[in-house]
Image (cartoon, rainbow, N blue to C red; front, side):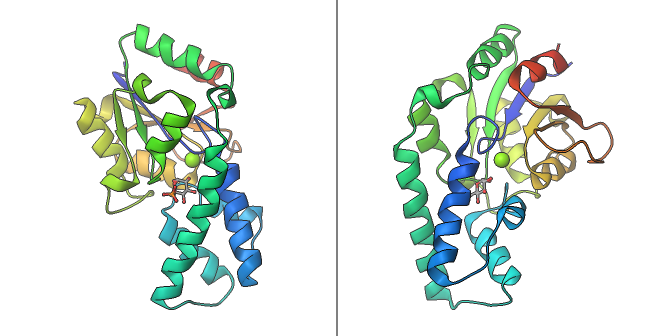
Length: 212
Ligand code: G6P
Ligand code: MG
């Protein structure tokens, strides 16, 4: 039924979502801004710049353009320090078996991520070659909830959007998949109403069962 599976990266393939949280927290502590996990959840799937804008709005404050760039650079520097410590064994045990099972069934696999660090992360985890295509933050002008990153992934795979399924841990990503006309599996998200037809999974073994 599906010919391609497009995975979000941060918070789905790996736990870099926690590193994003730690790096934003460190930046906010330095700047005297309020930041907690509920604000962090709004940043999932959203570009670095839009994330900072959400944090500033939450604090009813603003920064000039120079300071915005300085803050983004600092956050990314700290985030990349965490990435440097990543190793292939950081992948959860059921990730690679599912990916190879899907490939064995003839499905094409892609990453669809708003991150500009996606290739660095895939390299650290040693899984760059597992994917037939990578659509990332360097290739898009609109981040999720805009569908662009998933449409780029489908086009790289030469797959019809209606025959793609997306795995996502962010509300913004689910909206993006729906706007792209793709099926969607919500990963480790509360079972609330995410819209028509959204499936749920809390590990990769369950994703495999849903795609059988
Ligand atoms: C992903 C994450 C977001 C992050 C965005 C940009 O979508 O879910 O939390 O802000 O990528 O990441 P980057 O690595 O480019 O700062
Ligand atoms: Mg994510």
